[in-house]
Length: 196
Length: 196
Image (tube, rainbow over all chains, first blue to last red; front, side):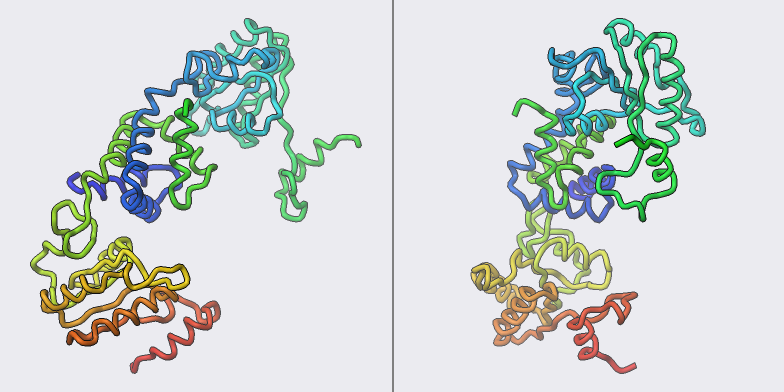
């Protein structure tokens, strides 16, 4: 393309949640900003794939063969949290409530879209459960149809290998109003009630 | 910074309207996407300042000394549309309703913020009006306090030089409901009424 500005808008508009209008605004901002900022941002994006790779053990983003979580000796190898994607792992890390290790599936079962067990690679997970002495697998896939199907499939696949398999709780979010909750969430919140 | 992913999030979060949450999502998307896309987007951003400059005549973004509008012999040099910023020019171009040339101020009068006439450089505009044989100056600064103050200042400054000075119309937007219009817009729409 012979117009660098139009090219930049087109490339920015491929980002998720960025339409042509926002992409145009961002491109004009970059043009109007300090050239050093544009150079730094451009280099950061262009080099990110060379500088960041997948952790050999869990699939998280990593700068070294093992990610920060896997390389941390204070993390409990006996509890494994299974997530669909790295951003989910990052969200759990940010909550600061989990001290075990992770396992990133990079996929969810979606039979309607033709995505079957092959995409999940449960054998890799089973190998980890056996070799790392995992006592409990916490399945933290989304509370969606695909996430629930994947959780069920993992629970069945892991049954013969001795580790407990648990599922993150479903219920009303923090600050959630009963009046505005959907029926499924409300039903799950009632089913999952705990004694006070 | 020793974490390229955190660095990328920080740089993306400096873009207007992009908070840390969105920046994190975009960074993960770039990492998960085709490395060729990251290379193209990164290069496009890093090189945009070298490849795009200001038009010597009107201040629009340009690939050559003159921008596309100024270099187009079919544009009427007798009508000059004054805008505050290049994105405003781009929006007018997209509407396809203006066939004259532009003049970008790159600023608006804002006495409360200490931005006075020096920031506007009205002499450059006056020189253009005289040298390019401008018959009409259409002031298309925003309908804000700063935009109106700038329009008034330009009208007074241009008075001695013979060109007509006009202001873009103010009124209800296309599809606008009277019920939801603010009082000032409604007042302007009434004041600016035209015979049918």
